[in-house]
Length: 362
Image 1 (cartoon, one colour):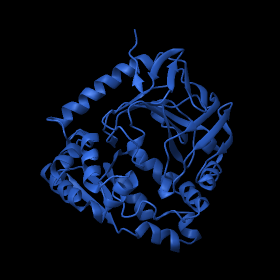
Image 2 (cartoon, helix red, strand yellow):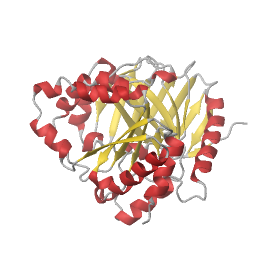
Image 3 (cartoon, helix red, strand yellow):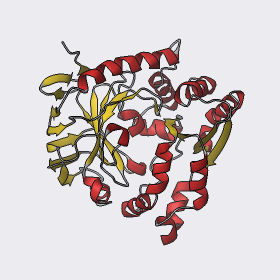
Image 4 (tube, rainbow, N blue to C red):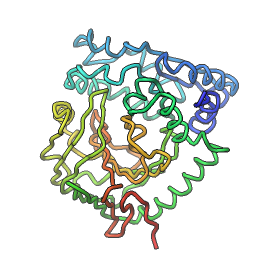
Protein backbone atom coordinates (compact mmCIF):
# COMPACT_ATOMS: atom_id res chain seq x y z
CA UNK A 1 0.00 0.00 0.00
CA UNK A 2 1.41 3.40 -1.03
CA UNK A 3 0.10 5.13 2.10
CA UNK A 4 0.84 2.98 5.17
CA UNK A 5 -2.11 3.37 7.60
CA UNK A 6 -0.02 2.18 10.57
CA UNK A 7 2.62 4.86 9.97
CA UNK A 8 -0.11 7.44 9.45
CA UNK A 9 -1.87 6.40 12.68
CA UNK A 10 1.38 6.63 14.63
CA UNK A 11 1.97 10.17 13.33
CA UNK A 12 -1.56 11.22 14.31
CA UNK A 13 -1.37 9.64 17.77
CA UNK A 14 2.12 10.66 18.77
CA UNK A 15 2.57 14.02 17.07
CA UNK A 16 -0.87 15.52 16.40
CA UNK A 17 -2.88 14.27 19.39
CA UNK A 18 -0.12 13.20 21.80
CA UNK A 19 -2.48 10.44 22.91
CA UNK A 20 -1.88 9.07 26.39
CA UNK A 21 -3.39 6.81 29.01
CA UNK A 22 -7.03 7.48 29.85
CA UNK A 23 -7.69 10.04 27.12
CA UNK A 24 -10.98 9.77 25.26
CA UNK A 25 -10.43 10.43 21.55
CA UNK A 26 -13.45 10.93 19.28
CA UNK A 27 -12.61 9.90 15.71
CA UNK A 28 -15.07 10.64 12.89
CA UNK A 29 -14.91 9.65 9.23
CA UNK A 30 -16.62 7.45 6.64
CA UNK A 31 -16.34 3.74 5.96
CA UNK A 32 -13.92 4.51 3.13
CA UNK A 33 -11.24 5.36 5.72
CA UNK A 34 -11.49 1.92 7.34
CA UNK A 35 -7.75 1.07 6.90
CA UNK A 36 -6.74 4.17 8.82
CA UNK A 37 -9.59 3.86 11.34
CA UNK A 38 -8.60 0.32 12.26
CA UNK A 39 -4.94 1.32 12.58
CA UNK A 40 -5.95 4.27 14.76
CA UNK A 41 -8.08 2.09 17.00
CA UNK A 42 -5.15 -0.25 17.54
CA UNK A 43 -2.66 2.59 18.07
CA UNK A 44 -4.88 4.38 20.59
CA UNK A 45 -5.49 1.17 22.53
CA UNK A 46 -1.77 0.48 22.62
CA UNK A 47 -1.31 3.93 24.20
CA UNK A 48 -4.04 3.06 26.74
CA UNK A 49 -6.38 5.72 25.36
CA UNK A 50 -10.06 5.23 24.52
CA UNK A 51 -10.86 5.27 20.77
CA UNK A 52 -14.43 6.40 20.10
CA UNK A 53 -15.03 5.72 16.42
CA UNK A 54 -17.94 7.49 14.74
CA UNK A 55 -18.13 6.15 11.19
CA UNK A 56 -20.64 7.58 8.72
CA UNK A 57 -22.08 5.97 5.60
CA UNK A 58 -21.12 7.39 2.18
CA UNK A 59 -24.56 8.94 1.51
CA UNK A 60 -25.35 9.85 5.11
CA UNK A 61 -24.81 13.62 4.84
CA UNK A 62 -26.78 13.90 1.60
CA UNK A 63 -29.61 11.95 3.24
CA UNK A 64 -29.65 14.31 6.20
CA UNK A 65 -30.01 17.43 4.07
CA UNK A 66 -32.69 15.79 1.93
CA UNK A 67 -34.87 14.92 4.93
CA UNK A 68 -33.99 17.52 7.59
CA UNK A 69 -36.89 19.53 9.00
CA UNK A 70 -36.90 22.93 10.70
CA UNK A 71 -36.08 21.39 14.07
CA UNK A 72 -32.89 19.92 12.62
CA UNK A 73 -31.81 23.18 10.98
CA UNK A 74 -32.45 25.32 14.06
CA UNK A 75 -30.97 23.09 16.75
CA UNK A 76 -28.76 20.13 17.57
CA UNK A 77 -29.10 16.94 19.61
CA UNK A 78 -28.13 17.31 23.26
CA UNK A 79 -26.39 13.93 23.15
CA UNK A 80 -23.93 15.21 20.55
CA UNK A 81 -22.98 18.19 22.69
CA UNK A 82 -22.67 15.98 25.77
CA UNK A 83 -20.28 13.61 23.98
CA UNK A 84 -18.09 16.39 22.62
CA UNK A 85 -18.02 18.04 26.05
CA UNK A 86 -16.81 14.80 27.63
CA UNK A 87 -13.95 13.87 25.29
CA UNK A 88 -10.34 15.04 25.48
CA UNK A 89 -9.56 15.18 21.76
CA UNK A 90 -11.29 15.05 18.39
CA UNK A 91 -9.97 13.80 15.07
CA UNK A 92 -11.83 14.37 11.80
CA UNK A 93 -10.77 12.35 8.74
CA UNK A 94 -12.16 13.48 5.39
CA UNK A 95 -12.77 10.42 3.20
CA UNK A 96 -15.55 11.26 0.71
CA UNK A 97 -17.36 8.84 -1.56
CA UNK A 98 -18.60 11.76 -3.67
CA UNK A 99 -17.04 15.22 -3.36
CA UNK A 100 -20.15 16.73 -4.98
CA UNK A 101 -22.72 14.91 -2.86
CA UNK A 102 -24.04 18.17 -1.38
CA UNK A 103 -23.92 20.25 -4.57
CA UNK A 104 -27.71 20.54 -4.77
CA UNK A 105 -28.26 21.54 -1.13
CA UNK A 106 -29.56 25.08 -0.66
CA UNK A 107 -26.61 27.04 0.81
CA UNK A 108 -29.03 29.12 2.87
CA UNK A 109 -30.10 25.95 4.70
CA UNK A 110 -26.48 25.12 5.41
CA UNK A 111 -25.81 28.62 6.75
CA UNK A 112 -28.93 28.39 8.92
CA UNK A 113 -27.78 25.09 10.43
CA UNK A 114 -24.27 26.48 10.97
CA UNK A 115 -25.70 29.36 13.00
CA UNK A 116 -27.69 26.96 15.16
CA UNK A 117 -24.64 24.81 15.86
CA UNK A 118 -22.39 27.67 16.95
CA UNK A 119 -22.38 26.42 20.55
CA UNK A 120 -21.29 22.93 19.52
CA UNK A 121 -18.53 24.37 17.36
CA UNK A 122 -17.18 26.46 20.26
CA UNK A 123 -16.93 23.40 22.49
CA UNK A 124 -15.19 21.44 19.73
CA UNK A 125 -12.60 24.19 19.27
CA UNK A 126 -11.93 24.24 23.01
CA UNK A 127 -10.75 20.61 22.87
CA UNK A 128 -7.56 19.31 21.31
CA UNK A 129 -8.53 18.71 17.71
CA UNK A 130 -7.02 17.71 14.40
CA UNK A 131 -8.34 17.42 10.86
CA UNK A 132 -6.83 15.18 8.22
CA UNK A 133 -7.78 13.15 5.14
CA UNK A 134 -7.63 9.65 3.71
CA UNK A 135 -7.35 9.35 -0.09
CA UNK A 136 -10.41 7.97 -1.87
CA UNK A 137 -11.23 7.52 -5.57
CA UNK A 138 -13.57 10.51 -5.35
CA UNK A 139 -10.97 12.84 -3.84
CA UNK A 140 -8.41 11.62 -6.38
CA UNK A 141 -10.84 12.39 -9.20
CA UNK A 142 -11.44 15.86 -7.76
CA UNK A 143 -7.67 16.39 -7.75
CA UNK A 144 -7.47 15.25 -11.38
CA UNK A 145 -5.21 12.35 -10.47
CA UNK A 146 -5.22 8.56 -10.49
CA UNK A 147 -6.03 7.14 -7.06
CA UNK A 148 -2.52 5.72 -6.59
CA UNK A 149 -0.93 9.01 -7.64
CA UNK A 150 -3.13 10.92 -5.23
CA UNK A 151 -2.21 8.55 -2.40
CA UNK A 152 1.47 9.18 -3.19
CA UNK A 153 0.79 12.94 -3.17
CA UNK A 154 -0.85 12.69 0.27
CA UNK A 155 2.08 10.63 1.54
CA UNK A 156 4.51 13.37 0.51
CA UNK A 157 2.30 16.11 1.96
CA UNK A 158 2.25 14.25 5.30
CA UNK A 159 6.07 13.82 5.24
CA UNK A 160 5.52 10.08 5.49
CA UNK A 161 8.05 9.68 2.68
CA UNK A 162 10.74 10.94 5.09
CA UNK A 163 12.91 8.67 7.25
CA UNK A 164 11.59 10.40 10.38
CA UNK A 165 8.26 12.18 9.74
CA UNK A 166 8.02 13.60 13.27
CA UNK A 167 11.50 15.12 12.97
CA UNK A 168 10.51 16.61 9.60
CA UNK A 169 7.44 18.26 11.12
CA UNK A 170 9.49 19.61 13.99
CA UNK A 171 11.96 21.07 11.50
CA UNK A 172 9.10 22.79 9.67
CA UNK A 173 7.83 24.12 13.01
CA UNK A 174 11.25 25.65 13.71
CA UNK A 175 11.40 27.34 10.29
CA UNK A 176 7.89 28.71 10.77
CA UNK A 177 8.85 30.00 14.22
CA UNK A 178 11.57 32.10 12.60
CA UNK A 179 9.05 33.47 10.12
CA UNK A 180 6.71 34.35 12.97
CA UNK A 181 9.48 36.25 14.75
CA UNK A 182 9.65 38.49 11.70
CA UNK A 183 5.90 38.84 11.18
CA UNK A 184 5.25 39.61 14.87
CA UNK A 185 6.90 43.01 14.33
CA UNK A 186 4.76 43.87 11.29
CA UNK A 187 1.96 46.39 11.35
CA UNK A 188 0.61 46.26 7.78
CA UNK A 189 0.49 43.48 5.21
CA UNK A 190 -0.06 44.09 1.51
CA UNK A 191 -1.03 41.45 -1.05
CA UNK A 192 -0.46 42.25 -4.72
CA UNK A 193 -1.12 40.26 -7.86
CA UNK A 194 -3.39 40.05 -10.86
CA UNK A 195 -6.71 41.56 -9.80
CA UNK A 196 -5.38 41.97 -6.26
CA UNK A 197 -4.17 44.90 -4.18
CA UNK A 198 -5.24 44.49 -0.58
CA UNK A 199 -3.88 46.08 2.59
CA UNK A 200 -4.71 45.03 6.13
CA UNK A 201 -3.35 45.58 9.63
CA UNK A 202 -2.01 42.86 11.92
CA UNK A 203 -0.53 45.22 14.52
CA UNK A 204 -0.54 43.61 17.94
CA UNK A 205 -2.03 40.36 16.73
CA UNK A 206 -0.56 36.95 17.59
CA UNK A 207 0.78 34.66 14.85
CA UNK A 208 0.17 30.92 15.24
CA UNK A 209 2.59 28.22 14.10
CA UNK A 210 0.44 25.59 12.34
CA UNK A 211 2.93 22.74 12.34
CA UNK A 212 0.73 19.69 11.79
CA UNK A 213 -0.77 19.34 15.24
CA UNK A 214 -4.19 20.67 14.28
CA UNK A 215 -4.22 20.01 10.56
CA UNK A 216 -2.35 17.13 8.99
CA UNK A 217 -0.91 17.88 6.53
CA UNK A 218 -0.15 21.42 7.59
CA UNK A 219 2.46 24.06 6.93
CA UNK A 220 1.23 27.60 7.54
CA UNK A 221 1.48 30.54 9.88
CA UNK A 222 -1.66 32.56 10.51
CA UNK A 223 -3.20 35.34 12.52
CA UNK A 224 -6.40 37.36 12.73
CA UNK A 225 -6.30 40.75 10.96
CA UNK A 226 -7.58 43.88 12.69
CA UNK A 227 -11.26 43.56 11.89
CA UNK A 228 -11.78 47.05 10.45
CA UNK A 229 -8.52 47.27 8.50
CA UNK A 230 -8.92 45.49 5.15
CA UNK A 231 -8.92 47.91 2.21
CA UNK A 232 -8.80 47.07 -1.48
CA UNK A 233 -9.53 44.15 -3.78
CA UNK A 234 -8.49 40.53 -3.97
CA UNK A 235 -9.01 37.74 -6.49
CA UNK A 236 -8.79 34.14 -5.38
CA UNK A 237 -7.53 31.96 -8.21
CA UNK A 238 -7.60 28.59 -6.41
CA UNK A 239 -11.13 27.09 -6.49
CA UNK A 240 -12.87 26.47 -3.19
CA UNK A 241 -15.44 23.76 -2.54
CA UNK A 242 -17.41 24.44 0.63
CA UNK A 243 -19.48 21.32 1.33
CA UNK A 244 -18.83 19.99 -2.15
CA UNK A 245 -19.96 22.96 -4.25
CA UNK A 246 -17.21 24.46 -6.40
CA UNK A 247 -16.81 28.22 -6.10
CA UNK A 248 -14.11 29.70 -8.31
CA UNK A 249 -12.93 33.04 -9.60
CA UNK A 250 -13.93 34.81 -6.39
CA UNK A 251 -13.39 38.57 -6.33
CA UNK A 252 -13.97 40.61 -3.17
CA UNK A 253 -13.73 44.31 -2.46
CA UNK A 254 -13.17 45.51 1.12
CA UNK A 255 -13.82 48.88 2.70
CA UNK A 256 -13.15 49.51 6.40
CA UNK A 257 -12.71 45.76 6.87
CA UNK A 258 -16.01 44.63 5.33
CA UNK A 259 -16.84 43.05 1.99
CA UNK A 260 -18.74 45.69 0.01
CA UNK A 261 -18.91 43.82 -3.29
CA UNK A 262 -18.43 40.18 -4.21
CA UNK A 263 -18.71 37.96 -7.25
CA UNK A 264 -17.63 34.53 -8.39
CA UNK A 265 -17.20 33.16 -11.90
CA UNK A 266 -18.74 29.91 -10.72
CA UNK A 267 -20.90 29.22 -7.65
CA UNK A 268 -21.82 32.87 -7.11
CA UNK A 269 -25.07 31.90 -5.41
CA UNK A 270 -23.11 29.99 -2.76
CA UNK A 271 -20.82 32.96 -2.21
CA UNK A 272 -23.75 35.35 -1.74
CA UNK A 273 -25.53 32.98 0.65
CA UNK A 274 -22.42 32.54 2.79
CA UNK A 275 -21.89 36.31 2.97
CA UNK A 276 -25.48 36.65 4.17
CA UNK A 277 -25.04 34.04 6.92
CA UNK A 278 -24.61 36.68 9.64
CA UNK A 279 -23.03 40.08 10.29
CA UNK A 280 -19.54 38.65 10.80
CA UNK A 281 -19.48 36.73 7.52
CA UNK A 282 -18.29 39.81 5.60
CA UNK A 283 -15.26 40.36 7.84
CA UNK A 284 -11.87 38.66 7.66
CA UNK A 285 -11.16 36.26 10.53
CA UNK A 286 -7.77 34.97 9.37
CA UNK A 287 -4.81 35.52 7.11
CA UNK A 288 -2.37 32.66 6.59
CA UNK A 289 0.79 31.98 4.61
CA UNK A 290 1.33 28.50 3.12
CA UNK A 291 4.79 27.01 3.74
CA UNK A 292 4.50 23.32 2.79
CA UNK A 293 6.42 23.00 -0.47
CA UNK A 294 5.64 19.27 -0.50
CA UNK A 295 2.14 20.42 -1.49
CA UNK A 296 2.85 21.77 -4.94
CA UNK A 297 -0.59 21.82 -6.54
CA UNK A 298 -4.25 22.36 -5.75
CA UNK A 299 -6.23 19.18 -5.16
CA UNK A 300 -9.65 20.69 -4.40
CA UNK A 301 -9.43 20.28 -0.62
CA UNK A 302 -9.04 23.50 1.35
CA UNK A 303 -7.43 21.51 4.18
CA UNK A 304 -4.56 20.75 1.81
CA UNK A 305 -4.64 23.63 -0.68
CA UNK A 306 -4.23 26.39 1.91
CA UNK A 307 -0.85 24.85 2.86
CA UNK A 308 0.64 25.16 -0.65
CA UNK A 309 4.05 26.79 -0.29
CA UNK A 310 3.99 30.28 -1.76
CA UNK A 311 0.28 30.99 -1.34
CA UNK A 312 -1.69 33.19 1.01
CA UNK A 313 -5.19 32.49 2.26
CA UNK A 314 -7.73 34.69 3.96
CA UNK A 315 -10.83 33.42 5.72
CA UNK A 316 -14.14 35.19 5.92
CA UNK A 317 -15.95 34.76 9.22
CA UNK A 318 -14.95 33.49 12.62
CA UNK A 319 -11.59 34.50 14.08
CA UNK A 320 -9.40 32.19 16.13
CA UNK A 321 -9.37 33.78 19.61
CA UNK A 322 -5.77 32.72 20.22
CA UNK A 323 -4.67 35.22 17.54
CA UNK A 324 -6.39 38.11 19.29
CA UNK A 325 -9.11 38.16 16.63
CA UNK A 326 -12.59 39.13 17.79
CA UNK A 327 -14.82 38.51 14.78
CA UNK A 328 -17.72 36.16 15.42
CA UNK A 329 -19.57 34.23 12.72
CA UNK A 330 -21.12 30.86 11.99
CA UNK A 331 -18.77 30.49 9.02
CA UNK A 332 -15.02 30.27 8.56
CA UNK A 333 -14.31 30.05 4.85
CA UNK A 334 -10.70 29.94 3.70
CA UNK A 335 -10.00 31.33 0.22
CA UNK A 336 -6.61 30.91 -1.44
CA UNK A 337 -4.64 33.44 -3.47
CA UNK A 338 -1.75 31.90 -5.43
CA UNK A 339 1.33 34.14 -5.42
CA UNK A 340 3.48 31.77 -7.49
CA UNK A 341 2.76 33.56 -10.77
CA UNK A 342 3.72 37.18 -10.29
CA UNK A 343 2.25 37.83 -6.84
CA UNK A 344 3.82 39.20 -3.70
CA UNK A 345 3.16 39.66 0.00
CA UNK A 346 4.96 42.41 1.87
CA UNK A 347 5.10 43.34 5.56
CA UNK A 348 5.56 47.05 6.15
CA UNK A 349 6.99 47.23 2.63
CA UNK A 350 9.49 44.40 3.13
CA UNK A 351 8.99 41.33 0.88
CA UNK A 352 7.83 38.12 2.58
CA UNK A 353 6.65 36.10 -0.42
CA UNK A 354 7.64 36.94 -4.01
CA UNK A 355 6.56 34.76 -6.94
CA UNK A 356 5.80 31.93 -4.51
CA UNK A 357 9.18 31.96 -2.76
CA UNK A 358 9.62 32.85 0.89
CA UNK A 359 12.07 35.73 1.22
CA UNK A 360 14.42 35.67 4.20
CA UNK A 361 14.84 38.87 6.12
CA UNK A 362 18.16 40.68 6.20
